[in-house]
Length: 73
Length: 426
Image (cartoon, rainbow over the protein chains, first blue to last red):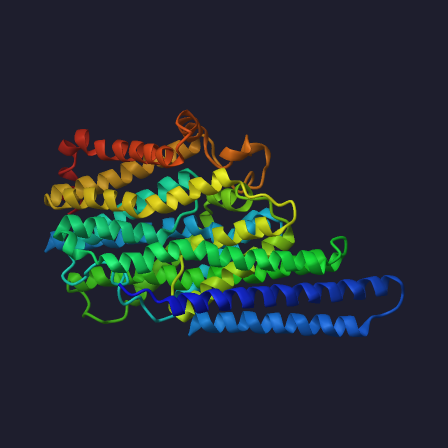
């Protein structure tokens, strides 16, 4: 019996890093949008926060696209 | 010849029924957190999951070359063995659904195959070490990997602290959960519908209808996709409730972290060649997300019953599969009797489920839970379990035994009635 510890280990590592990175990015994006919302409520604008938020969401969308690619191929 | 085609028809129908139970058993994996955190309305969630499962079924042409991944020796496997295995898998899936316990449909299928193969050809038909590497180790690893990832991700979200009052926060997490749930649904459709296509194709090959090694005919792909989508749309509300509310209480951040972790683990594991069960990854992720929030609780009594069900899945489905194979070995009347057992057993379980139905209207209701430990179990079973609570292993086993007894006794009185069935059908 040969257990593929290397594969299991890489599944573990990749899952942990990818999940934390994605959830972190997404949460940062949400924080950015919230800042923008608050700024808009005060009548100003927070361009940096908004741009950052969209960048975060774009990365998340790319990750989802890669996920779909993995499913299809 | 007539008899052979009839048998083939029975196997195809049974495989599609298994696909259907697989669909509604596993809706929870993709949609439980989405429904319980309110990101999607229950009906919308299952509809979306159903569509994505259907799409997933058509996405990949990489048909499962072996239905058991080498666990049993599939050379010269007889069609009856496949039928018996499916009977075991379906009955175990229905029983765990009745109890509201998320358990792996693939493991149920493996169990049924092992039981039927052993009864048919002896222990040499089973590859013991493959069981350890493909079933036992993943069963331990999946919830750990997904749980730790979800826990770390949940910790992080609460550390970053998005303003929970803001509109953008609610909208954001809603979108995030929908996206990750969509990925899980799509992956499920691709993997699990493929499994059914593999089974039907194998049955067609053993009967010489299609050449060995050929792709499944279009009607197989379409019917497998439709069966899994219909099952998903029906929604395994009992299991959704256990996963979304019974194991822990989820806030949108946790739901998002859990769902993302599950999606990542499923995709990473299938891509890196160490397949982990979807169900076990999702349950583990939900528990991890529950532990990651300060003050979050995991209801370990519910979790323990779930673990017990995971442990029992292989042997229980195996026993039913072996019993079914014992019957089918007896000849045509045995096959008819097995079919009667399958239909009768399913009917009994369905009737029991009607005593305390769970559907899209009360899937997220708190008051149904009664006390914390027994959330998600219907009345009859709750009392049965309460009567023998102390050793959890015994309780589920006892209930399982009851289920087996009722279903296995069924053919007794039915035997005289059984033979006319094939005659009528032919």
